[in-house]
Figure 1 (cartoon, rainbow, N blue to C red):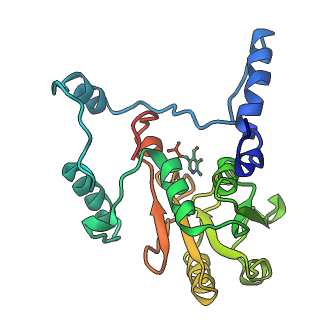
Figure 2: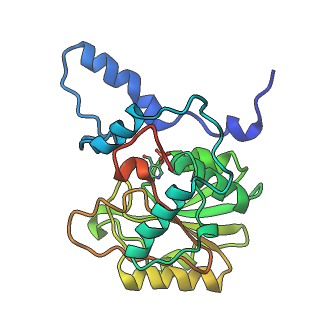
Length: 239
Ligand SMILES: Cc1ncc(COP(=O)(O)O)c(C=O)c1O
């Protein structure tokens, strides 16, 4: 039996490659600090477990297809407080950030297409892109420049006829880079000029440690993906 050429090109996720080494080192008594996977280490809100304990419906049925109204309201309120105003019909609940990203990429990318992503990047972007038949064109960054990547010339020099989108991981994983207002505006401008999608992965939007303000744009093809999982320490319950 044959696997698809798309999946053959994916290779094993570096995070998974790492796992057996960590297990073997632990067995040798080495103390391991897991920097490869973002395991929550902050307490999950007790209200979550309370709600699970008191869930008493006899059948766990499918949710309504536009999403559970209370959840959609809560998401809308969350963004309203950030001065980002979404219509309910613009909010789409998925099983985690990965599903949201995979759906977004599948809607955008065709065979042979390219997406610009600052490197180093979250390794699963590679699998998500490859399974669409597309590939990542990395935007190079370096520690000497604080891993900043949002420079017009740098980005425009990487755009070609295959480019369909730019991925903005803000704050960045693994670099922690937070885009300034000017950088965000420049990216929106470049995306509009070249007719590209700008995908905003805000998985870590609640984790800005140095006081920078997180800037948003949610029009002109910029898509905000935010995860309950990371923000509220709920690894198995994801939006
Ligand atoms: C930048 C980034 N985006 C997306 C994801 C995937 O999110 P989820 O675990 O909710 O599927 C992760 C997971 O670590 C991530 O680091």
